[in-house]
Image 1 (spheres, chains in turn green, yellow):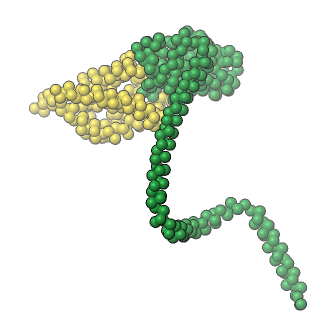
Image 2 (cartoon, one colour; image 1 turned 90 degrees about the vertical axis):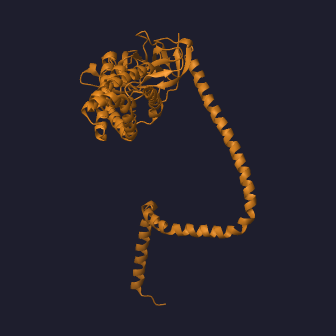
Length: 271
Length: 177
């Protein structure tokens, strides 16, 4: 068979070029062409969906009428079962919540076993934006008095500022009027932690000794000075150290261990 | 008799606002800031019922709030008294028919109340003065209060003028005849 050598070479070159293009194309990631796929899909899919729906309808139609009474019965039985299950789910939810609260209280009691404590719920919060006092549902008849320390499962909450027979007002440590004498857990350097207007879980450490080296994530606890808070109650960790030109002006922001926006159970230390 | 009914109504309004303020608005906040509906309430008592009623209700409501939640008794009492007085003074100098003036009054009184409250508190409890955070909070609160005033304006207007008819009967007569 006669073959033209020129067309033969030409054919080989075209094949090689095509192969090279193919190799290139196969290396390009498919995602780069997703917009083309999307465009095509958006054109085709509605039609495809419609057709499938029609097909299913037509093919299911012959059994539709025969099954309908069975389905009704089944539906009724399932609904009953569903309501039963929902009820038991609700019961379980309640049990779980109760369990969590009890566990929390047990943990608290174990953690602060050296103190005599009274548990209480937070029943009211400050209506103003500029202070963060709370009211709890335990008062004089539970043995609570002014200046007693209040804690939660994670750490210090504040102290009692006034008390009625069945309620007590607590000044939290994040309140701008509060200042707590604290110390760094590692170095035992004393600092004063003051509440700020900002945030619900941030206090400001001031009066930091000049020789003290502050490190982020250092933990802070009460120093026991000042006569209100007992020694060694966990307050929080240092979040940020702000250095100023003058070393005496520097301060640190402490993230409190207690989240005051979600605080609902507290413990009052009676002794 | 009607006056007694109105006073009871105002006290019920106070209780409703207290419940709203301590529950509903503690999660329905604007950037974490609650409004202060008590300022609007006391201002409107001052505006529509007169200076004396404004001061009286302001002081009583303030005292109740102090007892309920504050650290010291007297601070909110004084400040709400001043707001009631301001309501009376503003009533003499401005028209209550325009929505804009009412919103302006709410803005001014909210600022005066919060500034005074913060100033007194900072002196008594030796706060570290935080101007920027305070201003941000106050501006958001003023905005929130203004929005609430716009929403509540029709109710306030209607109730307000009926209060005014009851409490200021004699004064209006002497003024016009």
